[in-house]
Image (cartoon, rainbow, N blue to C red; front, side):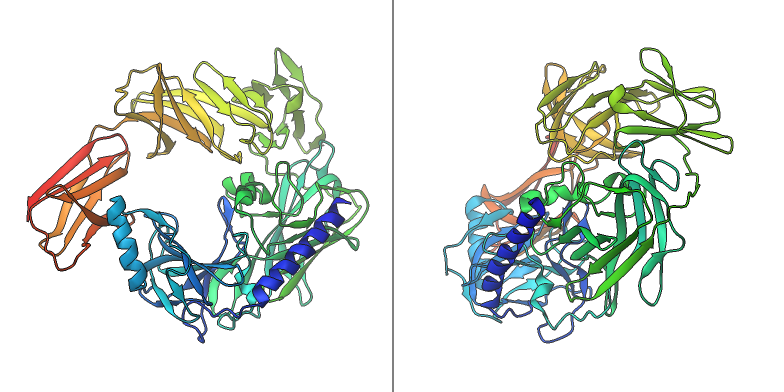
Length: 610
């Protein structure tokens, strides 16, 4: 019943969208009438979200004209040093919106108005909402110029079409002739993961990847695979396009077992409030351990995304079956993957070098009797013996083991507790307190932790050893240090080898509290060194500086002449700021002051008489 309801709801949504989009013929936003190439498509997995637009290549150049794709008016203007950088949002008569991001400059009318607002607010970063029709444009009018601003990693145009509910849709479904694609998707690998204790892939518990080969008809595994019990199926796939080497996203995937459709996803539109669910849409733990981003063809615990029309939570395999997986891109190019399953027993021992956690289980091997330490040692029976190795499973819901006995040695697990999802919980330990909201976790967290004093670097390290755990929303961690710190300058930093990333924090009665969505290693560092300011150019017409900070990073900057605000544009990638006058005819004259403050509130002031 749920699947039928979801399917009918999708049909209604698509019908409404069709009325919106069919009422307007959209023009391509850049180089219209010419072949364009993409660096990204809608639905690609980008870390913690699906990509919501297309990234149009600009040949490494900036300053190309950007055109209004349809009649309408500018409804939002945003300028930011991160994210979309310089961005325009346009509303069209049918209620849809178009978005143009990472721009270098706006249309002069828009730019002049935005500049005045920046001076009024005395801020480079602004989020502005002009009145309706204040900046009206016709289809094909130039509204801005392409750039490389914000979090862009290279010059390009990020372009979106959103429906009347501000949900990004698959732009390529509108059939722009500027993009050519007659190449079907590629499916490189398939993976199977055991979801219950008695499930097996080729005789073993765990997650296993298999290469696929291309035949004239389909992609397939090199040899049959034996599956028993409840199994989740995953694929690594991408979509090539004409003339470019990029591996783009796929909008449609369907999974069939013996002719029955058991899973279907369609990335036609996205809800921004569901985007974080992508962390359980693909196999995040496997990716963090060095694998590719494998698309799950089953609904994982905590996944609330609305791109699925038919779902399963794992499939019970028993007899010989045939799996067919169809992948389709925005231009209806499709590929089929065929996987033959056999009822014959297959023994293929895993490369299990150390204990691994799969869902609610610890999986390990030992050449001697394996045991787990709870209040006392509990001997285990192997579920499989192969050659000289015995393979063991421990259900973590039966207790959190402090250690495992493997090959005659005691191996600490580092596990300190089990934290359920969908509950507001404060988890207290001597070294920290973990405060979780009811929506922080997708699934049960088996928390691992270790405290370390690194005497060589004089660091107090708080190792949260769950880097592969996907987290839905921020949780607060209160660290309880034993060292003394200058609380005016000491903040929390995440630790990745020799690299430190500023996290911030507030001190409260000897603890420092910060928000995070990552259970990795943290430390507390004091930053007492102020930012650097390097003069690049200063005259009556133009001011340019390089600003940098070697630890906590730049928090703010402000420029004035005789106490009057001067707008400075900021490009963090190049660590540059530069001036823009409100009135180009008035020279910079007087006492110029530039103050730069870092995230530990160290400040540097540069002065010069102009």
